[in-house]
Structure formats: structure tokens, C-alpha cells
Length: 387
Image (cartoon, rainbow, N blue to C red; front, side, top):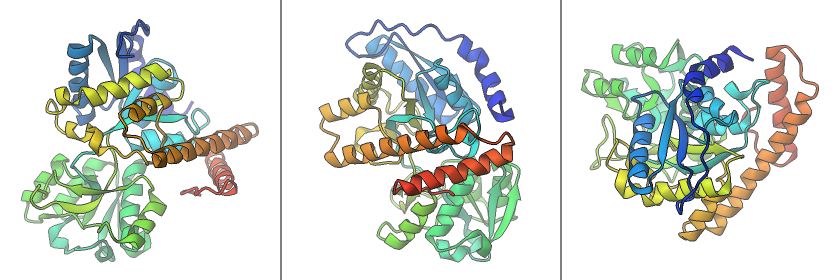
């Protein structure tokens, strides 16, 4: 067990041990008496949204939603893998990186996971590279020669940064790469003038400080009609979607930013959840939306009208059944879903073959799996993204 996995398990052991047995006396909702989600830490947006959903479920359906906070992407998946939680309100790393078996999931304990989405939050905030206005970075091409933050042990931040730079045809070789031990220190440096650009959510607290500071704030646009720019971005991070930023520092509904973002949080599970439970969870999230949409910041993103059904992880068959019932699911969505399920099959087969004779050395293991994974995907005519 790696240090990261060990810390994740210990961090959730106390909470998971308190979980009651999964009472499956389901009513007409299809949900059990107790539903369990993992989420980000207490007080986070993900956690607060879960509380709001739980209150609506309790009031309207009589079921209980138990929230288990987890400090990182691995920690939020440990209870799902152990059968101690049903769902996770997770980030892109806990969904897409886990599916791909990469980064924190490129370990002997993990590998590619059978991720299934239930529903996603596509809010008005941006997850993007933000710049100080005084750095005069009007477009992503203007990043050349500028100071760009790179955060240790933060793959989702760094890949997001790399993808945004790629939109403008810029690489790490074209900028001054400034390394930081954590997200907080990168934000402090942006405020203090030690760096010109860093990856963040537009609703992050430090960005409001940047907006009111002498430096000012600017989100370079990603014109949605710039096919070449989007193609370059998607080669680095295929999970980005076209988005209009309407919420956050330096952004208003009157002056939205045409840019890119990705769903957050993603309500997901692993493959073993029963069809009626996934169906019931999707149905509750859609039909109870009026009851919880104003109960926590960012909840508007759960609206059925905002869903990205052709994304990079497949939806659970139970959720799909519900979406078909309400005529929200198209043939194109189904074709994409089946392609993604096939991709997971290729990854699982490659993992099984690799693990049978994998090297014991951790570094050699990571390198070996990265190559084996890329080879298998390319042989199947699929884009490995990372190799």
C-alpha cells in the first residue's frame, strides 16, 4: 500500500466504520433507506451541496443521505471500492484519472476503475487559467515569456494549466515555470506579483482578492469557434467543455467569459451499484432539483438542462434508464457511452495483463503501466492522451 493510499484509508476509516448496513427496503423512489456519498471536506462547496441534496431527499423521500468527507481524490474513492459508500461527489481526477488508471491511480492498489457517472454539476463558474491583469495577457498566446504556476502533487491543476496553454499554442518551454508546494502558495504568489498566471476556480476566495488588488484579474477567452485551439486543448485534457463563465471574480452575468471548464462536482459511482439505486439517485437529483437548487452555492449546475451527456466517463445504466424515460438521452449519447465502456474494457484487460508480471519497483511500475496502457489503447484505435 502506498503512503497516499494508506493516508486515504486512515482518513476515512472512522467515518466509514460508522456507516450503517445498506438497508435495501426500497420505496417507490428506488433508493435505499440510507444513501452514502463521499465528498470534499466539511464546509467545501461539494460537501455543502450534498447537505442541501440530503435535506431535500429526507423531506420528500424519507431517506437519509450520509456524507463522508475525504481529503483527496483517492480518499473519496476508498469507501466506494471497499463497498462502504455508494456514490462520490468527486472531481475530475477522482472520475477521469481513476478511469484511466493514471497519476494517483497508477499504483498496484488501484489501476483503472469502472467509473460510472450519475449526474454532473455544470455551473457558471470557470475552472481555468487565470491571469493578473497587469501582466497584459489578453489571449493564451500571450503567455509566452510569462511566469506560470506549477503546483507539486496537483496533477489536475497542472494538466489544466498545460491544456489552457495549449489552446494558445504555448508549452512549458515557452514560459517561465514557477514551482509551488501547494495551491494556496500559488495564489499568494499571484497576489504578490511573483507569478503571472495560475489555475483556479473563478469562485476561489483568493481570486476575489486578486480582483480588488492593484494587479487586477483577467480570464483569457477560449473562443468556442476556434476549432484548432480546442483540438490542441483536448489532446492534453479531453474533459474540458465549452463554457460561458458567469460567476466568479471579475466575471458577471452581463459580461460573461467565453471560455472552457469541466463538470464539478461529478456524482459518480463504481460499477457494482445496482441499477435501481443508480436510477433512484439520478431521478432524485433531477426531480428534487427545485427543492435544493437555492439551498447551497453552485447548486444550479445540477439542472438537467445543463448536463454533458457526451463526456469522458460513461453513465451508469440505471441513470441512463431514467434519462431515457424523460427523453433527455439521445442515440448519440448512447453511442458515446458504449464507446467509453469499451475503452474501460480495453484498460481493464491491459491492467490484468500488465499486473500479472509487473515490476516491484514503484517507479518502474508507473513507467511500465503508462506504456502498457498507451500501447493497448493505440492498438484499439483509441487516444491514450498520456504516454
